[in-house]
Every structure is written in C-alpha cells, then in structure tokens.
Length: 425
Image (tube, rainbow, N blue to C red):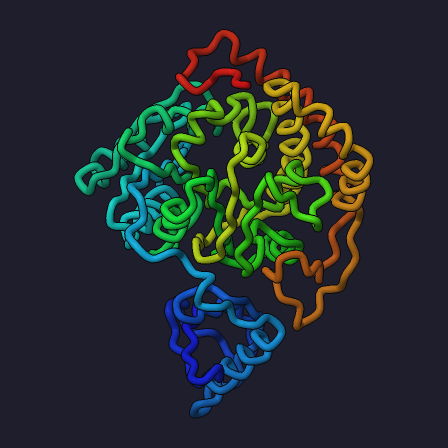
C-alpha cells in the first residue's frame, strides 16, 4: 500500500491512498510506503483492524506517526533541485520476458519527465517475442528497439549506450521486472543539472510484492533498498563511516535504478562486458560502474525520491541463486577493476584486511527472529534469520567471481565488440 500523508505545523493530520490494489484483509499484515509532500519517507508493516467506521484510517495514521517519530521527515531543501531535468534516455535490457517487459514499459511511458526516451535492448534473443512486443505495441508510442546478440547484461547496456540519442545528457538504466514510480526518471535526472561534478545517481528500490517466504527473507535483510536519507559520495572527501570506500559499491545503489552522466559513462568506457547477469561472472556490472565513476573523480548521489518497485524472485531456489550471485558479482567486479585499472591495486590492497573482515561479517549466518512487528524493507533490520546455507553460497560465489570473470573475458575475445568494450586508464 502506498500512502500520501498530509501535515500542518509539523503534525500529521491525514492520509490518502496513492495506490494499493485491493483493500487489505482485516488482521492481515500490510506493507506500507509512506510519502510526505510526494517523497518516500519510510515504510511500515502493520495489521489492519476490522473495518468499522474510521478505524483503519485512524490506525494507519497513528502507525505512520510512530514510524516517522523514529525517522524524522526530510527537510524541504533535500528534494530534487528546481528546473527541468536534462534530456534522458532510459535503457532497459531484457531477454525473453515480454510480459514483465510490457509492465515495465507501461510505467516508463507514464513518467513525468518532459524530455525522456525509452530504449529496449533485446539481449541474445531466442525468439522474436520481444521485438514483436516493442515494434507492434510500443514503437508507435516512441519506444525504440535494438538487438544485442552477445549475452550479458553489461554488453546489453553498452549497446544501449551506443544506440542512445546523442542529445541525451543522462543515461538511466532499469530492469524489465520493475514498475517505475511516475517521478522516477525526473528524480534521477534532475540532480545532474545542479552539480556538474555528479557522475551517477541511484535510487530507492522497494518490493512490489511480499508474498512468499523467499521474498520476505530477502527484503528483511535489506533487499535492494538503501534507506530514505539522501546522500552524496565525493571521492575528494571520502566518508569517515566507509573505511572501504570506494570499494563498498553495494552501499551506493543497484542496477535496477541508476543513471549516469552520459559523458562520464563514455569516458570510463561504459560497463565491463565480462560482468553482469548472463555471463560466468554472474553479476557486478553495476558495482563496476559505480566504482569507476568515483575513481574517475565524479560524485555519486543516492536519492530515495527515485523509486522503483521490484518484483523479487519467488522461490527458495531463486534466493539460493541470488545469494551465490551476490558473492560472485562482488569479487568479479573487483577483479574487473584491477584488470582494467591496475593503478587501483595499491588502494585495494590497503583496504584488504578490513575488506576480508567485512566479507566475513556480510556472509555470516545472521540471527534474528520473525516477529509480527518486524518490517520487511527496513533496510538491514535483519529481523528474520538468514540461513547458513545462503551464507555458504555467498562465500562460494566470492571464490567463483574472479574465475567467472576471466572465463567471461575469454568468451568475449571472439565476439563482436561494441564501441564501449575498451580498456581505459
């Protein structure tokens, strides 16, 4: 459920439902996003009482007050800068999922960005279903289609960079399994107009559904979300609370909601094509982009105003695959950085002892108990136990990552190359 709160004199006085599908069943747990002045400010998990009179509204309003008392509302100055956002191309890489893609494209076509194009990259297709969907259903609405036959998310993104409108100042990326909030593209693009040193902006990712144990478990341990506080990372002023900076790329955001200054992304050579889903590396393409932008001297900004709803995978096997991929993607990314930028090796070695301690903590069996008031989506609350099997899979993924990356590079030697598959210094 998505609720917009109203206030007067700092006091929450009312609410209205922005979206929420069917009415919640009394007594059933409901996951709620809270907005204030249109901005996401928090989440809560509550149980709706019997719908007698005004009881549900009063209950939700009090729950919102309790939540925001622990997380004060953001100041007016923390929103996107005024003025029109720069021209933006949104790139969606996809493979044989036309139903999910259609849902994502519908949300992207509903964006309030005034100067925004959508580009679909069909990655290593086995059928013509994606092309047919786009050309028959969405091309008349302005959506463009390109094909990339070499498998891999980073390769597909690089094809999108090459095919994007050269007038676009900003290149945004999202996945085919999301629903973008109508303000998503504007919130991602607007900060670039205000800060010429900004190279990347990332956004908030929340679960579209929390129906299966696997979805709840993933979200209770942070999911893809990075919280409700905007933050700017500046390589000239390394954050004191990030001793591994800039190599803790998972703190910066996720590939389902990210945007880059087009000039900066081309300057660093795009994404490493041997990383990402669809390659033996299993992931790490977005992490590589974040770190490379920072090491090139650009700032990175996280804003919760840029919201997408992500459809998490549903089964236990999906979660097992995801745990392995998290570990593999991290070490594949670090291997890619050293392979392409050997000058980063001393900085990485200096952070290695703390990095190993961080990796042990990250992949440890995590405690907690599944209590009724635990909030999936509390961004690291860890209220549900994290099974040791998943911790072991993360560690195995970390061992696999460098080998997977090298295997992916060997495969690419004989493949056609895009303009961005270059080693840069």
